[in-house]
Image (cartoon, rainbow, N blue to C red):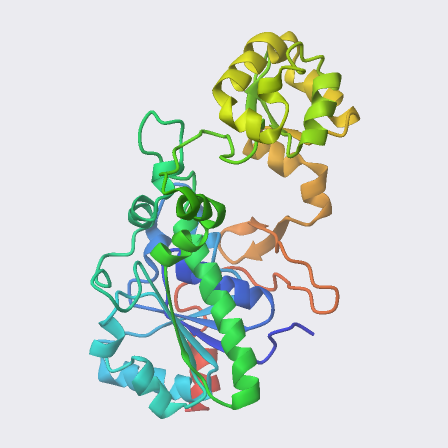
Length: 380
């Protein structure tokens, strides 16, 4: 048994944020029907790389789904969609606000067909407010949310290494859907969920926003460092970098002893508050007087033996060779009809009673049309 067995999701999304949301639901058993325009999800053509003609990007976020083409410019196709809505539980869409209304497929119209329907809309900036019509691109949300203001080393604006706005909004939408399903089980009523890339990234500011609210001071980019803890960042050793997470004064005392830090008893570095105030001097001295003496691997052994959190900075090759990654089943393989055996990232949340499962590969365009039509319209 899968936790979301019998939950039917009509997925109108494309690119990344919506497909990630619906993949989360599909991994736990929801029947996700990916409804694509005639040209298909844009990411089917995004590449290279391609795997036997299939976009690696598309393959990464569309497993456990079925595909059918519907052209909403055609009245008959919109009518078919409404037939599907009558039997569905959830609709997810990430069109620009107003698009679904122009087709007569917005929440109010869908609710008239199925009062229990849950509709989740993901956009760049939300469905209301003066910025609602802005295009929903991840780099735009990263810029406006403050993420690019605090990322990097101060040499210039820098975005995160992958599309955290898209992924974050997709996760919030999946969370909202689960809350709405829970509420519907008690009230019998569906509802509309409205979230955005902009709000997802703002909501993740947490302690940075808290620091700003407390002081009025703009946070600044600190590279790999933490604004409230030191040393808590990458440090340069003889042959590369490692990360050290010295999260409290007890760990600092252990680090001073294990690493034979010659200035460890300096009052300027006694408490975490002292180390934050004198962060620049502390890091400069650690990287000049301490860490160049040994290799990354030597420091990792010393720090580990002393109980101080530390880690190598891993490449993708390192990640996917890590025994912990294998033990946690974070890479799985599924057979695709044209690409062959493809690797997929595993499911990161493990449930003891109803775990998720990768059951089918990402679908070919319109691959399941016949069975979907039969399911929602019966035999012709």
